[in-house]
Image 1 (tube, rainbow, N blue to C red):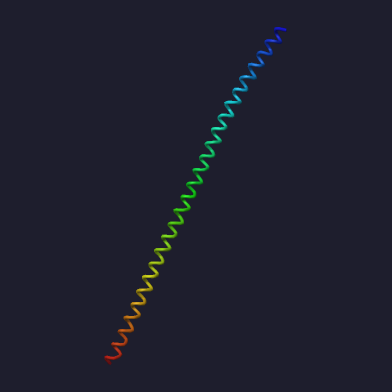
Image 2 (cartoon, rainbow, N blue to C red; image 1 turned 30 degrees about the vertical axis):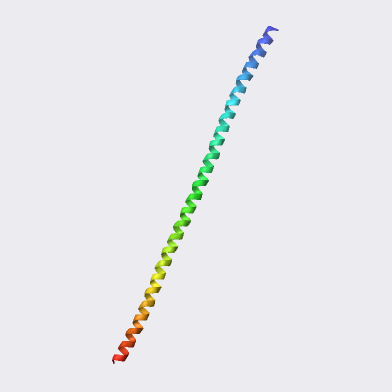
Length: 94
């Protein structure tokens, strides 16, 4: 009977140690899961920021291109006006 008691006591101690190891492993898992969620959120935040920066870059590039086109159109318009003035003047001189 004492042997059985020692065996049961040993098994209970072993079970307690295993339960403690399980609790520690679950705690580690919870911490790692939280870290993974935080890292995922940070990654998504960085991706959104990057997308916004790319969109802003595209917007500024399009704005710059539109300004250049506007300046070219204004220059052509002024050249056309001045060339017709030159044609009229040269036509009346001759």
